[in-house]
Image 1 (spheres, rainbow, N blue to C red):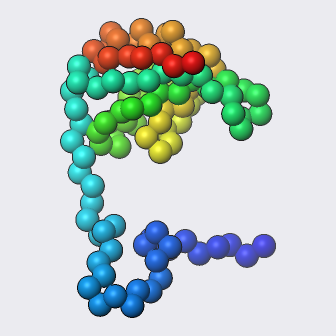
Image 2 (cartoon, rainbow, N blue to C red):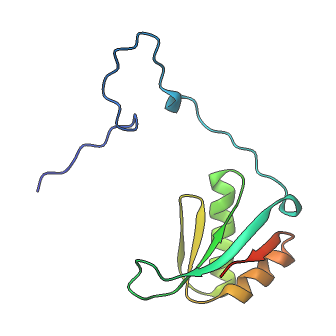
Length: 114
């Protein structure tokens, strides 16, 4: 199969509007809130993962690099793999209580879902 071309404009190829500006040209510099000001949701999920459980951390407000650092911290403390996708930290396995205690020790407000 032929590879599909990916456009950096979110799928927009042409516009007939003479005043059209693509907002993607401006970089997003979202400021990271302090841990005491953030509310993070910790939950378990098995949907579309072949029956394997992952622990999800949602609700982080801030720069992508800070979210990657948080994901790295959680992966190291739990001793497992994981990923950061679309603003959600995914940690392999059922580590809901352990992650909640790690985040509380780091100063975050936590809510357990599910």
